[in-house]
Image 1 (cartoon, rainbow, N blue to C red):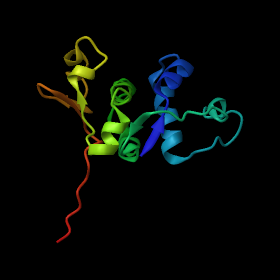
Image 2: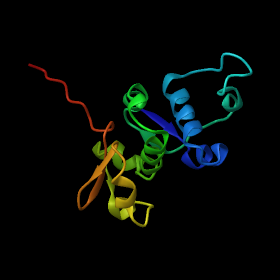
Image 3: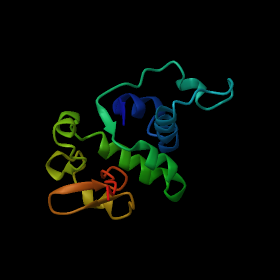
Image 4: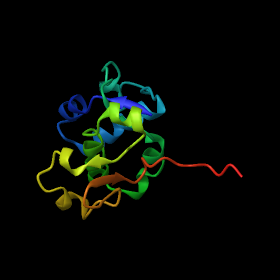
Length: 135
């Protein structure tokens, strides 16, 4: 699980979804820049801690080659609208449509393979708790 500051990430990247994902990947893998020309270098001294969260960011990073940066950007933006305390109390990774910051969430969900919804919630493909078989 990682905690991050979505408004800061969005502001620093100026909405560039590739840079947003680069920061999330850096936070997930605890990466440091290799040299001054590394794209991570400009984010090296920035504190990205916050109350937005991803329960299983490693799954998103590992499977990122399957998705566009736009899909991942919408995924991260909607994930940031979830309540951290609700997750800590219940383990629920869904986002209620009532709390969705988008006026028409279906417009963004139709083209996004990382998200799906029903009448009440938005579900995040890589956030669902993976239960291990104990038999």
